[in-house]
Amino acid sequence: MARRPLGGSDKRLGEQARDLGPADPGERLDVSVLVRRRQSEQLRTRAERLRRGDPSGDHMSREEFGRQFGADQADMDAVAAFAQSFGLAVTARDPARRTMVLSGTVAQFNAAFGVDLRRVQDPQGSYRGRTGVIQVPEALHGVVEAVLGLDNRPVAKPHFRSRPAVVARAVATSFPPAQIAALYGFPSGTGAGEAVGIIELGGGYTPQDLDTYFANNGISPPPSVTAVSVDGAVNQPSGDPNGPDGEVMLDIEVVGSVAPGAKIAVYFAPNTDAGFLDAITTAVHDTVNKPSVVSISWGGPESSWTAQSLNSYDSAFQAAAVMGVTVTVASGDNGSSDGVADGADHVDFPASSPHVLACGGTSLNAAGGVITGETVWNDGSSGGAGGGGVSAVFATPSFQAGLSATTAAGVAVALAMRGVPDVAGDADPQTGYDVRVDGSDTVFGGTSAVAPLWAGLIALVNAAKGAPVGFVNAALYAAAAKGAPPCNDITQGNNGDFTATAGWDACTGLGSPNGAAVASAL
Image (cartoon, helix red, strand yellow):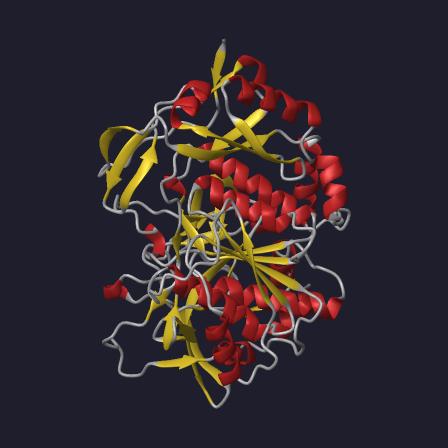
């Protein structure tokens, strides 16, 4: 059988990874295959209109999107025939998500895709890995765009930070999320009639903790929360508040406090390149829960992703924009390096996609119900700082044309690629959020809190408008350019190699939300 390398699938083991030998040939696994979409060029054109703020880029219903831009049945049949020829079972196919799930053994997948799956150990644990490229039959070249899940190493980390046991500052405080929303002037309302999707790659919540938390914060009845299983993952609390449970509870409690009338759907998926993408596409295309906003507080440095993953996720976010779904994403908690120890600047993905609202971090001080000061979140010695910088992958979107990133040395450098973040909000654990996790009340920060904060705000705007605002970046940047800034401009502080300045910067974007101005801009 003639084969072709699958573009963008090349993968390498990390520097600290050890190859422990071949994976068990009888080990069973599920793999997600992404098939090309119909009229992909037309989709890119519609997405570009949205990035420009062109009103002709109207939203499509999920059903209409599936009919026009889903996968072709003949393409999916061709993939199914190929899979079955190697003994692989097709356990799911979703034309709208253009996703097929194949099930089989390591030996069968090795043979089908020309790979050599290995057992790998690194400082984060053990996993099934691969090196090199994935091979596809000549007949499927151009039909198959990505094959995800052969490698099951974790691809993302949660972006929350617990307050250190020893408080580093003379004055530290914390806020219930509703109080932070009030400080930022969020519009009134409950978000009733809207649904917010939350992506989680581990951990879980207990209804008892949520009921207690919301009752203690005067929110009654508590928000409606539904767990959605993706790729076999379920709501499964670990009992460790500093583990993924912390992320899950923080996200739900922030959204539920800001927009208590909105339904919350929590999409649990495995922390793999396949699981993360499947969670995103499941949420975006969900015709049952129908979230108008999706919040993501997980990610990893752009440099850690394969090109096929970067392209596939960004395509999913294009689809979200065209269907009127706003996606808010945390920009990371490790400053301008994004935690990569190579001395260079890095940004976090999926925050760096030009089709999401990337959310950075600030340190917020308030007294008497008003903000008394706000700077870039950067804890310095503890290493926590809002992620931001310039993408190495995605071109400068039209809504950022003419902007510059100012370095710590005070040099303004015109954006040659996508700048991160777009907006910001309180993320400092020293001025953090009151949360309840695994039966204990504590304080969390991190940009993980900012993505659901903005998601709750968008849900309020959608409810008041009676229709989803969808892709919001173009409108927010346009309002700022016209002298009607939708955000509180943050002009003090740095996140390492970038410094805050008047206007957009690579630390806090356009700034923290001014709720009334955001609602007006949208």
